[in-house]
Amino acid sequence: MASSKELIQLCETFGAHNYHPLPVVLARGEGIWVYDVEGKKYLDFLSSYSAVNQGHCHPRLVKVMREQAGKLTLTSRAFHNDQLGPFLKELCELCGYEMALPMNSGAEAVETAIKAVRRHGYTFKKIPADQAEIIVCQENFHGRTTTIVGFSTEEAYRAGFGPFTPGFKIIPFGDIKALEKAISKNTAAFLVEPIQGEAGVVVPPEGYLAQAARVCKKSNVLLVTDEIQVGFGRTGRMFCGEHENVKPDAMILGKAMAGGFYPVSAVVASKELLGVFDPGSHGSTFGGNPLAAALAREAMRIIVEERLPERAAELGHWFMEELRGLKSPHVAEVRGKGLLIGVRLKAELGGARPFCERLQREGLLCKETHRDVIRFAPPLVIAKADLEWALERIAKILK
Ligand SMILES: *Cc1c(COP(=O)(O)O)cnc(C)c1O
Image (cartoon, rainbow, N blue to C red; front, side, top):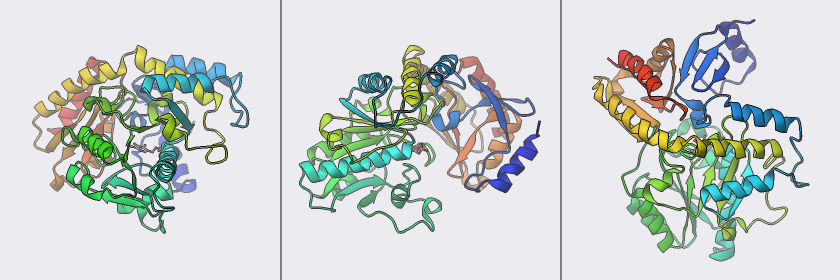
């Protein structure tokens, strides 16, 4: 079998260089553990950006995948399939919404939400044609399509990819006054992450989302939250908006929805909002396919039955306190919610990457985000003893 080095070389040679992964080549995963091609074992402390909250290769998902793969995998939406209806019903019940629209990647679901709120604005608010505005936040991350990177404030995401889609207004994250000021008669929606994951696990001031919801309601503006990374238990609630009892007009979901087995995303909202789509106005060949639907149904059941949000709340709170208790001279701030935790290192250290490389050698896989932040986001099935194991290693490299 080829070595890690040889396999990395293949990617270097034949793959576009749009990522800078840690030099580890994984071949197997089980629960919270992953194994490289040389057989070395690591604790996964990233969970594929929160897509494997249920842990790697969850046996219940392996079983569903095998069974459904042997029955029916794709019909396209030209026909119905026997998994889609139950999936949509169970998703709506879990989220507390009337309707769902299934897609594949997170970015596609964000695009779907953008189309929905624009058409809703033209239909119900009588916004003049092609004048709809959507308010977004600085340092946002909503995906990689040209429309989405067009309203990013991160130069690396945008440079060389214009011209971009108009109709987006950018305001500071966490600033309610800025939201109030930015709203005009043509504002269709405010699109926001409850916690900005890619920006470095940035938690807004307490009460921000609840206030934003009030401002939006008062101004007849739709509130759309991107729960792709923070949803499905990661922050200690099923959905992050629940921390402030916020029920947005629409939620955008993805990542952990199918436990890392398959890309499944969705927009959930009211009948009025998703009702703007009629046949021909939107679609996806793979969206809502029976394999995706069967996996998502089981993946969502696992989150509920294994009490993953509750686990994230209990363990996350304890773990964050332990991290703060390390009193590392290198750490500027420990922040987060549940088991989504950012450790911001002091700027003069020149970035978090070398720390992630040292953690890798210690058997802990993490990834830097926004240069100075190490994100800790283990699978939510992790046990306290394994977090203690991780803590020892983190303490060692932060001392
Ligand atoms: C990952 C992510 C996306 C994009 O999802 P993809 O499946 O990579 O397209 C969008 N928003 C947030 C908050 C994310 O974390």
